[in-house]
Image (tube, rainbow, N blue to C red; front, side):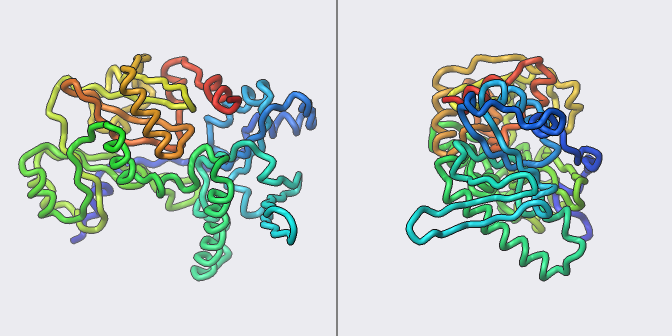
Length: 362
């Protein structure tokens, strides 16, 4: 079979972030311009943020954090591998010490109130610097660093805003199960790479297929290839597709013209729901994001209770949940542990920064 796997066998999008690999962090640039003039007596909380240069949420929220007495240290994946050293110290008669050191400072992870992993992984930071290594060396180095990242998540579990490697430990299959556990309905779902299973399960029903992990891959540093969900009016249309190469989530379409979709942003105890007002595609990523219109929506109290319970069971302080409402029922689709919200602010003029600050000050 010469066709690409099901979700790659479509028109793919490409995003080039190579021009974004510059430091736009508020605190970093302020310190370059004015020096480190933070009044230590006014600091209420300390946050360690692992992310990347192209993180518009952190770029935007940085001034609000500092103004509210929340100091933060930002570690970007692009310069982590070359600019940082890492040490876990096991003193004979005291607690373990975990330290990061770069050309500017040495930080002890125990000194932080929160540790926040956003767009950061061993694959991300290492891919920028792997050209000089052979494949065995590349695999070895990535394995060693992945252990360190996982170890941070375990040693400082009580400080985590989201679990380390959240896309794995709270993967979409796990999310669906947790959503059911807290009382949400989910669309009739099947995860498989077996065409016969799909045909037997869905028969002549409309099917929506989406990825298990993420809707993009970074095959080259800074270059993202996007692939979104696909809709099939019946399972027979999958006969000529490559289903077997990779397992996929298949969900029965909700055959109701009155289905409405919601984007729910959660920051600690604060929940903000937005209703999509003009989305026509089954996967709104296929539409021009700059034209999407959202309006604030107050969710029923019992739905908010389920969301809080889901977040608690997922060990998430922050996240963005997609919900559908159909025939008097609320359906859970998935949660984005990174909680990307900047594009929603641009579409609605709503500011989430105060909610981020309040979450950390509690």
